[in-house]
Image (cartoon, rainbow over all chains, first blue to last red; front, side, top):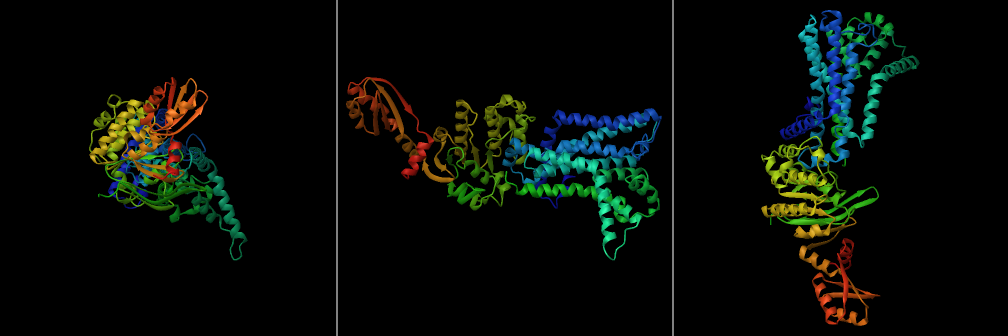
Length: 317
Length: 304
């Protein structure tokens, strides 16, 4: 998974990445904080599945994981949306200190005194911390599947597996972003502020931001000579496109379309008024299809890591 | 002669306005212990950071084991053992795991237990490093540096945190490594530590290499500067005369009740003997070790 960010990697670098990842994993799983984060995680996925199947007497897994906004106990958020928020925060907290902490304590001197290329440190941390976050995720999903089956429900294993893989990808997205920040940050403080500030922005302020983008574009089109205001449908497409650039929303939308249709997945991101309009979208354009959302998530792994590698490669320690 | 372990030519490094290193040229040969001596802030750590590619030079060339540092830092580190200054251990990993990590990193095949035994940590192999003292940390760092029988050992303030016994053990390991054929770059601000183990010294002051000398040369310079303070009943002119002509004495001065004698350390007993021969009673005496500052002064005033 880690090597996905770099081009053809020489065997010596692969060895180095593996050694660093293993060391990092061993040290990280002995941390109590991380263990607590893991427990929260297992309790959330396993617990909600247990609760829903207890209350609902035999639900299908899709009834829980594919529940869209309004579908889950009338809440505004979808289940996948909440899950994404928790996974994202856990991954971020587990990884934003990965490199900057070593730099400020002085363990990095020990690490780089050994024959490790700088980029192996960044990629090794990505692999190590992703494993740290993915492990409790897998346990959580396992508990959830058992709870649903024990409650007399059903689990579509193909879809369930895809959902698990998708969630692992989301873990990698947030670990990659956090490690990228950690590699580029000069101080622990700056890494903390950037990571948490970024999270709050994507979790809370992306929708207003997306709306702002739409309005600016609409304004430009109205005012420029020779152009006319975009149609409501074109506006909706643009608005949805900006929304799926947010990895949290891309994950949520993909999870919902996994248990429904692509259109349901995308419209889960829209407001109530836009949803009615969205029914007339018909065929989704390429940039709003499931593959496009996957590309967005992959880009969220590759771009921050490439940035981190580039910065960390040149920095004077 | 085989290729040099370290070769620096005209190396300069600036941090903004501050010149950390200025035109440093230096060679460390294989199988020698090279003492890199200088007060804190002289540029020793900057030099080591450059040798490890932690920072890059503004001018000059650095070669380690025949390879350019900026071109092949990883290949160099495969053949080098490093004990950095001011490093930290991984709190949650045991001593054995630290050494195993270094072994895996260097793709070597040693037994961690043997290395830990060599640095005196055999009994603490399975303890987490979080509870280690500074001295134990230094020992563990040394064990990691020794992994893979490196051709060059870079030790930055290696005696920091070690008790006298630990420092002696360190010196004997350093000599063993030299005898095996490894070059040892031993950086320290402590004259005594460098003097006790090194074959040759380079002295760094304000970013410039002010002198390079054999350890014998260093001793001579240092000995000339030994200062002896002698309390006598009455510091008469006779006492001054008695001491002035003793071989090895370079300066005598008198303050009421005591003499201050600058001489080679080998001449200390001769000075006291001369006073006794002149029937001058010695009440007490102290010797002052040459400070590093005084030593630098000598090296810069009278080029070796």
